[in-house]
Length: 508
Image 1 (spheres, rainbow, N blue to C red):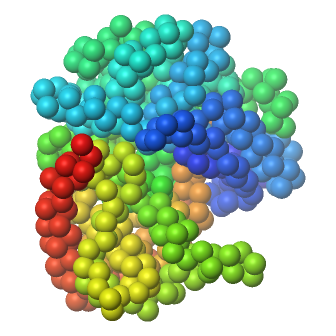
Image 2 (tube, one colour; image 1 turned 180 degrees about the vertical axis):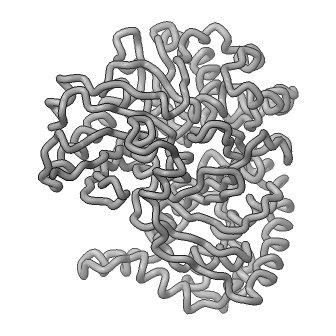
């Protein structure tokens, strides 16, 4: 009796990954390849779309070669990828220009003007999502003003996973998780043309494709593509949800009351709800989740693990080189160092607003910048390293506190979920157990869970999660540490508020 598998594809901001799962959700084989990440101007972030597709093809072929299976054993393909952003194609399905990524900051002035005129508030009241530089509609507005010929040649405005779905199936479409936070009414969960009119891009309504629920967003693999990828023709391809919701699904956060933080390049902190949550106003997202009737209320920060990567690259270069030579894990080395420093980092506080586009949660400011405070001659780089870890954890705590969310249990996803130190910090800061699911490719697992439901392998998301998600470990809070993190959060917030006017003045 042959074993059956599901193939997950996750198109991240900097890395493309393909992972083969069995029907119990175990990771069987995988491959990764650098994506295309271009910075043609300061503050811009783009991808060459053909390069992204080639990276997908490479990882799929490598994954299947490592697994050494019959292509017919792959029952379905689940596709996910970075959200927001603008991936434009012409009537023939070819790219019109490089994709504008979610982390691109070129629309900062347009977004600022929308908030100043009250348009941002009006949009939030319809969508439940705050306008930011990530928003596709704002990208279209910028292109309308600066590259009108680009939009004149555009037939469809897609996102990352939609581009891959188009290449695999020939179908131009998106799904509700990606479209909802930009163009949907949060109440009807359908396109609302008032949004386009408010933002001055109503002439491009025809470029917005159909956006079914993720479970309905499927089509057969094209024969030529199947041949190129070493897959069976007509294998079902299911695209969605996008990576934020997919990662939540991949660790078992799918139903009202569940909470999940994704510690990746960005930080995404989310609670599942059964009705729109518009308080606090003008901050964060409300968007469709994969299960019908479930919304995700989330606050997304611009930078999360990126802070640690930057600090390690700039301040631990010798250790990094030594780890490469000895094949040690540099992150384990750094975590051991940080754990030797006391809670509170000897009075040093770090604000992790490292992205050039500023911050989008729990506040919006294109001028926000990362900073250390409280440094004295007695501190070392180890102290600062501990402060970076704590700064990211305080950012998570800041987001949940701003939402007023009661987190009974936190499920952790993203690359940062591999960090035992971050897991313990979050358990202590939230006074709640932190669950880390088995495996590591949570976005891809969420995509194949969706594919398994879409193709009838499992009858429901609840059944699929029960079969495919298992906890690897649970981290419990250390008594007494919650109060200490609450005190740190008070200082962290006070310093952030005090810096607002300084950031704005410095950006002028």
